[in-house]
Length: 106
Length: 120
Image 1 (cartoon, each protein chain N blue to C red):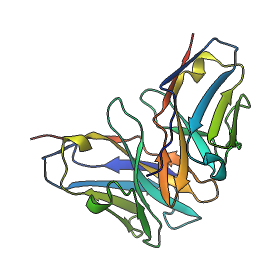
Image 2: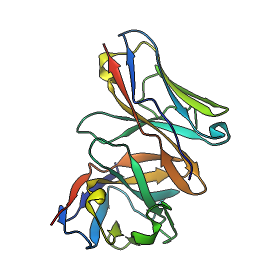
Image 3: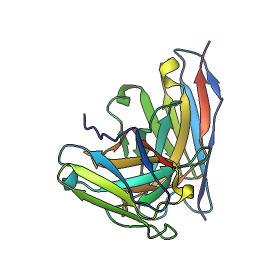
């Protein structure tokens, strides 16, 4: 079965750039999306189709996808960005999620 | 705007069948190029996709759960449902329903989730 791998945690200082990778076999041949989940809240999609931002998502969120790795980048990270982030892709009509990355802003 | 709300028993005995319903409000379950999914998250673990259904009734399931899962839709009630048979403690999780966008390839609207515990 297809798998997506994320680091369990990433730390970043306020105002700096955070990068969260998601790796999978030939992931660049698929579309990747990213979800933000804060405690007690439902997930929110922050990036879809590799690079697109839904309306209402700040411009500091961006995405890329090439080769075996998709990356979520948060520029000028703010304290409010502290959350769990999940990547997701489709493989043969099956949705696959990465294990999630806890982003700590300190 | 479209909202999703899960409902279910909260507690299920081992070996029994789990049944959950998601009620869609603020829009028709039959409109647009959307699909309707169930996703779960055990405590301290990541998200796991269970399956999806289109308003036509067409389904796709997670291969790891396929033998135990049935997702159905009732367009007259604007609801879709999940049945998971032969449950064990490993099925204890927060279960969420979500709307998927065919144009986005992403889940754009989620329910708040409901905790389901498997215990005797």
